[in-house]
Image (tube, rainbow over all chains, first blue to last red; front, side, top):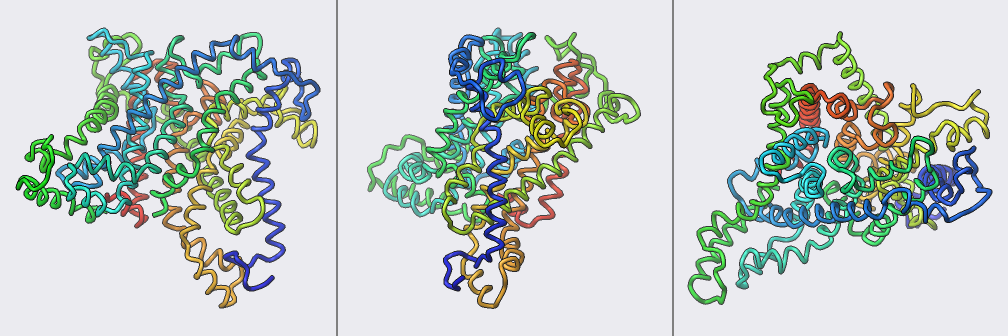
Length: 287
Length: 334
């Protein structure tokens, strides 16, 4: 071992072996369900219902065709896309304005606002589920607008977690952009909104992308609100997957195939935007 | 952070005067009076309205309902449900009666689950991040692999774990019983006492990559010279980890542990996808317990009382935690 190694610490041989073993075990732990998901999705039904086999005896891609017929998966897919997409776009747009105000202006009530946002972010969803349900029932009774079971109602409930998160992350991100930049824009004759859209937003694109990806991923995987606030027509993927278990059979191969299919969009999105997401998520925690 | 926010408004004010002097071509889309005083509120308006609609009003409703005798009978018109004073709370904290006993039990289960899961998530994350600190072949690949649980939608991953924990056709029993012969007969993992183990395993699998991510970012901020100086002074690797790496990570860890605590304590997805609407007693987490009281047994009044108690508990714990950690004080003081 030379003393001029590039690493922060000179690692002894024993550490290299510990590292190999530990990292292999961790990787195996992480990949185990992924292996099960992929391999079981390619097995015929009698195989997934029998003893588990590491190496499938027969391979079939039929589950990937059957998943669309056993349950209306395409409809659930569309519902998830509409609900998660709209909630993401709405919370990011609203959060950009709010975070800009908090980051750049001093005004009465600022502390109340930020503390409220911070604290609502830590409250569990179960806390809002019942009251929102009751409020939706009331609105339905008095105005005839059905929110319970509608996509609009679900989008609104998804804002309970995506909006405070987006505001909080974007405040941190906007704070890290030098104020001189938008002050210069103001001096150049831009209005405050001009400064926001011509200077602050472009400079904060990585943060905005990170917030949007995170909000979308969370909404795509949301289970709690979806389990109470959806009906046959508005069911999202999270709840729709339960349809593969019938009274007689559990179509495990189809469940695994469907799980893989619904994971693909977010995993691809994550891989493409990983750099932004990681930078954005960690910026707040590490500084 | 508060102190740094002063200049823009003053700046905006002074620029205003030069602008109205006519030297600049700018359409005064927003009246000056609003721009100076009201603009922040205008920008905040949508957020404030939504916060009211999705957080503050529901919380008020939740508190009101917790003082009412609200059952399925009154659900269409819950404003008419009779007042019951503190009855719901009395029932919830009467630990000698079945409902209170179950709530207390579920509270302890949640505490044990949270401590175990957060501890393991932190441990795995720290170990992996330190081991990936050096550059070596395969580092990028491992980093990508470790982030997979974070990227997969929660229910898709958890449902796969549910499949792996099946009694007859699951991987876990196949390995433990058939291949390694560690158990006399295949165990049940999703009912009975083992369900707690299953819950912790899935929760750690899902949660540790986040710890890994945050700690890895924290490691990048430790200046290299510290390590160089230490190795010149003859400090070994273990000493460097103990004296430099871990202390430098303290501020990051303080935020991380709080976030992990809140997520894990409030976790609903894992038990719900693993066990369904009512979890086995050994794995009856508080969020699913409240869900069950409200939406399975339709006892909304006591469900709300339990929610309010949970909220108070989380607020107290968070406040104590923020007071104990100086970094926490700073980050809450925006």
